[in-house]
Each structure stands twice: as structure tokens, then as C-alpha cells.
Length: 83
Image (tube, rainbow, N blue to C red):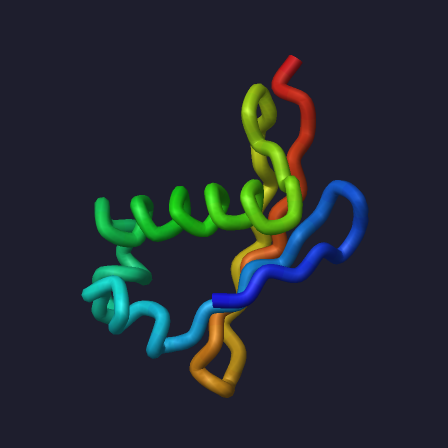
């Protein structure tokens, strides 16, 4: 798993198949919005906050998810105020 800061308010999280295997999540489970994949997503956001200060508390997130040919998944995350 790799986290990149794109702008002050936008990050990209990059996952690969090995990242899923390490969390014991198969591709079907990941793509079907399972409890395990939701937990992984929360873990990714926690890691983003710890590593680069990406805060999501009191914000809604807009997520752009992309699967790319190299068996990687890109998640572009952009918070916006929930008010």
C-alpha cells in the first residue's frame, strides 16, 4: 500500500493484489464491498492520517476508485465539509 499526497486536500492510495492477500481479502470479496474490504479502507484512511496528516473527521469523502491493468487499485480521496 502506498499513499501519495496529490494536493493539500486530495490523496491517492495505491493497493495491489499482494496488499489484499496480506489482509486475507480475495478479489471477489474486495470488489463486493464486504466487511473485510470496508475495514481495509478504514485502515487505509488511518494510515493516511498518520503518515501525511490527511484528516477525514467531520468530513464526507468523495472517492474515485480505479482498477488499472497492473493489478493495482487507485483510490483518489477528496474530503469536503459535511455542513
